[in-house]
Image 1: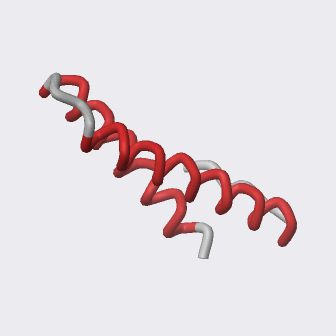
Image 2: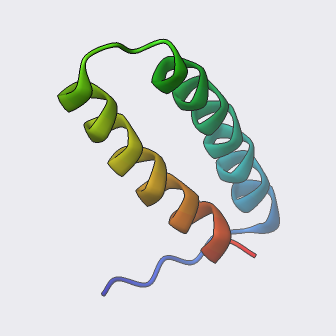
Image 3: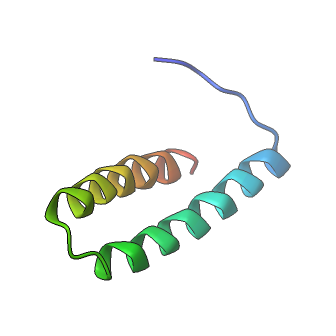
Length: 56
């Protein structure tokens, strides 16, 4: 496990970027027909969601 110290500004910027990425992933998942690609996107979504949750 790695610890990363962020300032409030950095934490806010990272959270905003994660929110944007998660929103885009949600849209892409809903428009993807390929099962394998959709599963890969969902895994990425899970990882980003976990990171977003840990920021708080």
